[in-house]
Amino acid sequence: MAKKILIVEDDGNIAELLHIHLRDEGFDITHAADGDTGSQLLESQRWDALIFDIMLPGVDGLELCRRARNMPHYTPIVMISARASEVHRVLGLELGADDYLTKPFSMLELVARVKALFRRQEAMSQNMRQDAGNLRLGTLSIDPVAREVHLNQLPIELTPREFELLYHFVRHPGKVFSRLSLLNLVWGYQHEGYEHTVNTHINRLRLKIEATPAEPRWILTVWGQGYKFVVPDEGEQVT
Image (cartoon, rainbow, N blue to C red; front, side, top):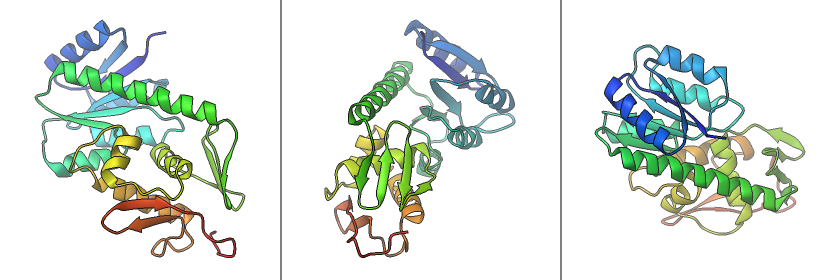
């Protein structure tokens, strides 16, 4: 079955080109020309990928991204915008976008990035199926199939990206990862200037799993190198 992609773009020419190039790759495309219609379509069914322009009539693309990430299932998101500032790129990525392209961009590049996101999503799913069963480190338990996390037998609510980041750490305890390598391994791209989104997600994870986020025991900063995941001593309080 063809993968379904929702495009929310108010520029008719760009929308038509996106439709043509993605349709030629076998994707099923639905287009909305404003954010309000896009929001209704977003909530009306499950999509395989989302492409949002930032500047839209009605609800803007950043709000659409936020709403998509509040949904129970994970969907790859590509943001496109005429705004080239680092602030907007970082903001989009911190809200949960998987990739960001600045207009004007190559249609072939956008198609390639969408296909890369699908490949990465499938690889992640295969890894989780292969792991089968819970991963346990100390009082932390992760079910990669149900995408559930428990700490001291209590459920921890994580966003899809937070889950993938924690899952990656748990599979490689004690190994140090730079912010750039985490972008490549967890987010699926490696571009300098985007590392702030890693910091944001690390901080959010610490708020959810650390007893004292300012003095972390699970996710440690290795100064000048990056981050690593460790299991606190049995006697430590980690609720």
